[in-house]
Length: 102
Image 1: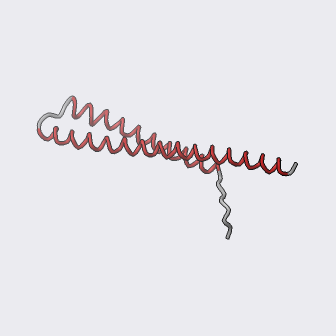
Image 2 (image 1 turned 180 degrees about the horizontal axis):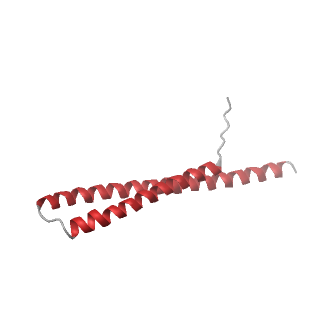
Image 3 (image 1 turned 30 degrees about the horizontal axis):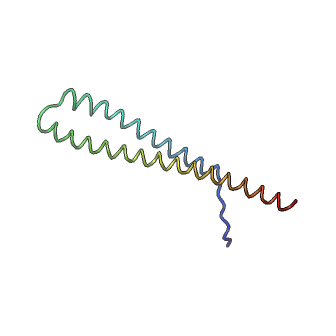
């Protein structure tokens, strides 16, 4: 076994893209649901105690979904940042090796 750390930057970027795509899919779904449930059903149609109770649940659910999207987006950004740092480190290490060999 080796104590060497190897990171495939392309795979980090692929993972970031995958996560960002999933976040966007969820975000789009929440918007569609909000347009139907939040606006058409709750705001424009359904009235009474049941509507009020459901509205509170909907707002809570929507907020939770938005928090998940934000966390996924942050994870994707962090993976991209890590990829950039690894690339910069590799360039710095390569330059140091070249200078040492001169």
